[in-house]
Length: 321
Image (cartoon, rainbow, N blue to C red; front, side):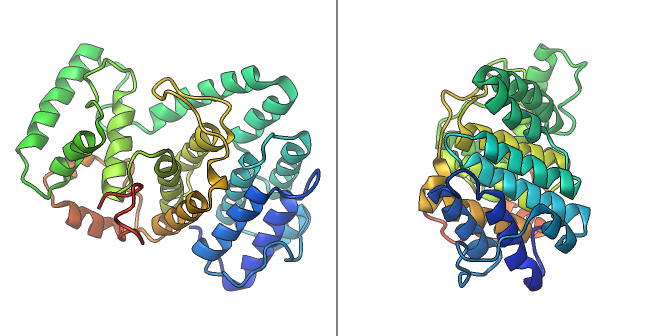
């Protein structure tokens, strides 16, 4: 969980600030995102993040004893790392140092290290290998059997979607189909994608969380998932999204383009932090449950079951509720 004891919030902020205080110092975007985290995730708008006491990696390690909270620190450090443009060897080295002392290992260390040492093409290859595995891990339960032939899977999806269409207004199934209609997307299985199972789970998560398909909302959705459960799969989902929508050096095949510096926009940074917090308030992770088993239920009941709270602003272009 991302909730911190009030006594350690300032220390964590100080560690994160120290971890990006490289080269000419933290960038304005890194400070903006750190301020959003302090204000909207940890409820400390009073903190002047530029002037908090900076903590070295060893000092952070003495404050954060648990493996989970250390992983949270690393993922937020990763977020700030991705917010440096252009990326620098000093920034990558700082994240590596903190990760080693905190005993954290993750895919991002290699990807960003190769980005500064081997260049964009090497980092892209790292990312594509990582993304392929991550998308398999995030596939809809019951649809991820690699032994199923594509025609059989497409027929299976067609049957399942036909069942969803029979459910009444207000159900999860009907809301899921409405998601595709609202945002002009093709249903999985209609374009012979090898990642249909991933898109079912991903878009069911969009539907239940009430997040749209803007670049800001896509990045916020990965933050929401990480907030629900900071396990290895959701940490990887956050990394995948940060590379595409913030670092901007790679793009998966299903997207037309990547983004760079998305979180430099104050509204995007606030949205990111708010969705981390909203995900953190859920009772359990619904991103990889059997969504078809829940599809007949009212979406309001599904959200209540998992503790999904309404977003602070429901009528902006980043949410649909």
